[in-house]
Length: 247
Image 1 (cartoon, rainbow, N blue to C red):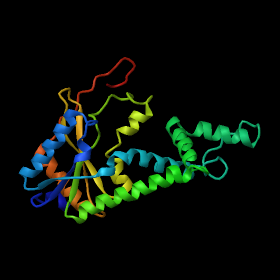
Image 2: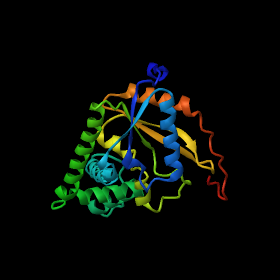
Image 3: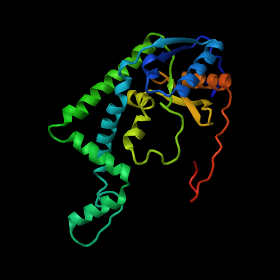
Image 4: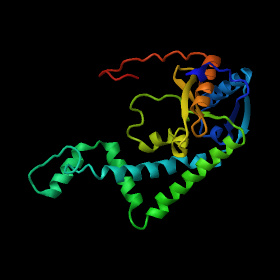
């Protein structure tokens, strides 16, 4: 908490050029760049940097994450772990009912994808390659921090907040929203998202600050500086739809 009161003067902030390419919404890009300019006015030094593998982060993450989900959730079979559903038609029916009723659609999707990625003949082609991308992405971030970059500033998402339920039926679109936030998760380094503005329609926009290994204090110092420099973003006005769902 003490780090939040520190002045950002002297911090070196990296702005990865790959995170500001065509897929990024213009309102989001402008808000994040304004946050960078606000940090600069507060005494930080903002520099253009490169993270060439960030465009592959989603693909790598959703191979690693689904493979780990498949492996770890295999134990929840209703025998050793988890609730059991027994329709009384034998062990195969018990397994099918237990796992069919016990997991939701997204969990089932991840189990199926992860099982495919780990099966013989595909392990090296998918999971092994994703792990190599993960290692190289972590090395790229470490290289930036070793060069003196204290935090890396990126958008939190390629777009502003979208309506509740808008992407439930399109898991690929939902996964692509994570293109920036999965990067520190893969690398195993601390990161934080802070509000940095809103679209003309009032939808909130976030920026992400990524630190080096065990660099939580520096991340919090930069995040607090952004909050002070940018100011509090008003909460969006929610309107109730018929049936009670918010928009």
